[in-house]
Image 1 (cartoon, rainbow, N blue to C red):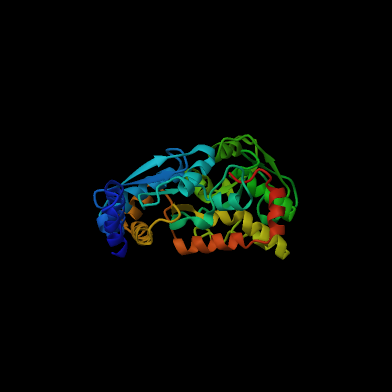
Image 2 (cartoon, helix red, strand yellow; image 1 turned 90 degrees about the vertical axis):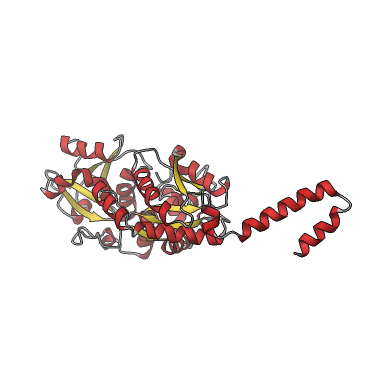
Length: 351
């Protein structure tokens, strides 16, 4: 109130200027006094998705939007806007530096963004430590698989003889896993780049062009029958955590014999633990951050969302905000020498 009284006294000498100052003061005071329910009532929230329409990030985001709106105080509408340029770097930069910070814009970008930021990815301006993390959906464990006629039957085989797998370019998800395992652990993958995504890679296995493919286990859902009937064999996972659907599948960490090897693998493959992340821009009001975090968690526990996700085969496994914040902190604590080694292993960054 002292500021208001002072402004009133100044108004006797500069009436027009003071009226403008008072208007700004009162508007700001009113906005600060609003509860999240008052603020969000009759509002529209934008959900920025850094991937094209129809991709897994997009389908997951639209499912979330349909159910999350009802859990936000004031029940605002949520409108999805795709911003896929630059492998979602454009979306990350927008959310970090350009989006309004009033709690009416949040978004999702590639799970690789934190790693890319630490590696100094060109054109990436966002600092993951500055975001207000809402949480994530999905836990897309990565696996390496082999076709039934490849002769590769288990984890040890990829270290004993050449194993030809499909890739999509040096920085692609298909190519990163085998290339890293070659350089860090001495595996014997031969990566054939040029395939257009996981479905194309599986077709290449069926045609006999390659012997296997490494990718997120979720990307094999359209081909689950090939795994069930033994055509595709899951050799190992690249996470330390068990693969819930296949607990018998071994982890590649069994082949890491030094601390340096394990640190390298953890940094490169940590992106999987981010799932499909969602953030608010930096400096968003704390009460609105808390309201959206609670709504995010409530939506993912909503039986209606769970049922719809199961029917559509969309992985909506919840990842709490605190786990993502902790993961970002661990990544930024990675020794500088390890980061430099990663840059040599993956000079073009992640995709």
